[in-house]
Length: 247
Length: 287
Image: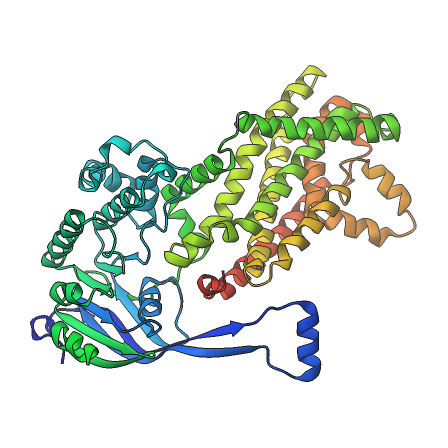
């Protein structure tokens, strides 16, 4: 059951029968390759991270991807972000997709906070003008004005997180992907982030969130999709799905 | 907000995407330069010190001890105009090969056109090439070099040829390097050979003389785009000071070799782009 509120809105993420498998390779030295080819032994084995996953996400929907470790949530998020390609099936997205697969993935420790804001903004698809226009908002939201011209390697992990998150929420994407990043930061900042995410959702942006903080995502999202060993086992109202996941 | 069409994420248009991401490219180049010289007192000055040392070593070893210089007038200009091309090529090709590994953290987490990385590596090597070019210009001016229209054109073509070849080879070996790290060692080997496979430390006349009974070997030697680029630089900076005696040591048909050099380099670029796109889909999981 999908949430009724959004069924008339256009589809922003279309996921059709997606499969993704990973090859687990052992050490490949020339000697081993030779021995393996002589003995006719296969050096690789693979496992299916995603197996026939299909669902649509409509504009303005907030979806929580739920599941235990290794259920394929992060893989799915990376496929939506375009970081990896599917092995089978198709994924299509509409508009600019910004993925916070990991906080501050595009941050470089040797650059200052200011330089990193520009760099990361550009990586997330913002134009130079857009970054300049929003620069003050980004810094204000992160509350680290004093350290903005310090190299990021001297930041505490909290400061780092604040700045990275702040850039991402100001990058204005149509589709926003968030992977397990709300677990960090102190409580006041976490509250602020959640408020900002609700704001983005109210503006009609599409959100897909992965988190192990089940109560928090259940409150934040209208829809929950539960993955188990690469397959969808439940899709419905987020609180119901969380209840089912807890058994 | 639904004005755009649905599209498949993570599929770009190859090198064309780099054109529409010029701002990001600029930031990546700046980052690379900053990272390169972090904690370094001399900083960019190293890009003068290294070629200067190289020049002095080769000048004495080849020019003075082995007496190659006695057959080549203005050997210092001859030597340095070749060295700058080889240095540019080595850095462009070497860095473009390794840039995907250096930026693994970014590639694994965020999608951006991956061609940006090899292209930014080429830009960084251009930044290091320019000071060497300035030194070459000053040295050439001191011994009486004056720019000619054809000479400037030759230098531009030589520069372009080296950049295109470096990018093509860098994309080819760089994408293979993600899967097999042997590629970067192989590239180091190629770069070692590159210095000696072009008339940088000796003259083209010596090659012609050694291979005079094997015309086809000379043809192969001349097909190497780096040989062509080195000769274009000799034409631009050395021939004007060396005069007719220098011109005698140049290949007979510069126009033809230049044209062939560009064809070879563009074929390599097309091959590099094709292989890169073929392998790109699995970069994030293989790095």
